[in-house]
Length: 291
Length: 303
Image (cartoon, rainbow over all chains, first blue to last red; front, side):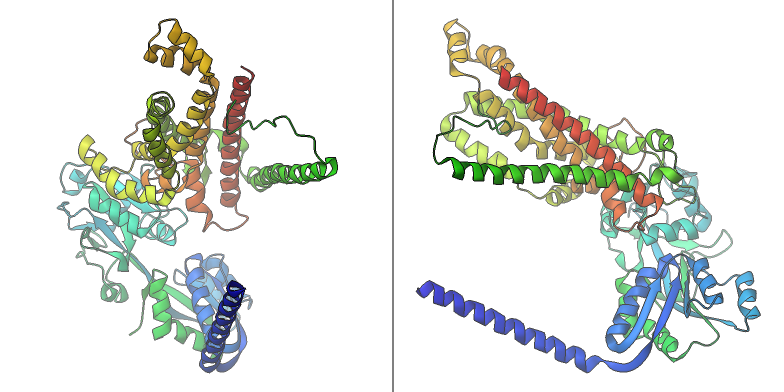
């Protein structure tokens, strides 16, 4: 009997607690809402689709009545939708092509580019590796398996072991597109399930080279400086060198609008590079832009 | 015969018939539910795998030597993944079979009761360790150790996976083969001892051969667990989709491929269907393993 009553009291207490929490959540979210209604269709780059969706989610949470739909399909798909008027904004991991610009201008609109984030990776090697920098061409040769020994790059006589992210990772695709000219990774490349496991493996393997997002580096690995080509200086990666465009294993990511964006579009793009937007950018493994 | 797999009904006490029949019906319903689930899972796997072969030749999938699922020129070759699974499983078998046979013989034939009571729960506890913990251990501790002992550039290889999977297979193999050994009638042993054979000779020449069907089933079921294990191999084998027959090379297993790629692979793409095709192949392999184990157990039960 007494047990029954204690149980009943405990249940009541938990219910009350849950109610109180729900009320608190309701009040907080109620306060944060601003008023700006309307809808946006954002379409394009698969690189940007997850980041863009995360921004849209946070933006919709902060602005009641706003509907933002984010779709992937690739940068070209996004530009096509922008030209056809099927999308308000186009996500792109490359600048607009001349043909796409002309098609848009034929409709009486001028493409306007907004840089919302950057893609960038650190190339890392074992701390005992005497190599300090590589060129983009050397990186490509290593990752595709054309060069298999550090000696031919001016290092010690050791084989090269490539550590990469999984095939489904955006970073894997970025490196393949941006560094390797869309060639395939060498078959012996070890595909690691996370950036942490790449760091762990590279820190233990004197033959290793791997790549991780800009924020991931630890003391246990050496970060390489990268040069565009033999004639250029090697640049170490940092948020500054990525933003000023001097670090080559990086690319700006764009949102394009046809003409100046409307109020809602403008607010959304501004949100992407705001304090809150930049926090999301970093969380999703990209480099935030803007100050 | 004591066995965890063939639970045969004993003689049934005659009591109220209707109550018994109702219970039987409920149990039969539950049992057929699991069969139905099995069938539906297989149908689902095949249904999701088949669309791949509209855009990608079946022959190239089964005999393809390259797995490049997100290349500009995609290739979904099963062979490197099959080879990876085979190599890791073979290594695990070579380590786990003698070890678990030894342990099972010790526990069932040699060990005093008190040691047995300590050893069995300890072994079963091995099965309770989450596979991600095994993987973490392999990545951080075992990889470094292998690297030092064998002078390798990296400890993330097939051998690392084999060692961990062997340990993970031990509980299944030991428990089931110990059951098989204990099911050998005491009279066999007594007869052998009475003929002047030593305990060792009795164990090796009488007890073990009498239990061979059950022991073989134990080994096969243990290996079934090894083939299906995912997280550990994903973390410790390095996942290079290359065809290699060296235990010190990195390999990529079928399970690791599915786990790593399914999460972010776009729905309805050839890549998505290819992963289901890999899953269906894996299902077929474990199905054959379990069927063989079951047939062996039945043969053992018949005597």
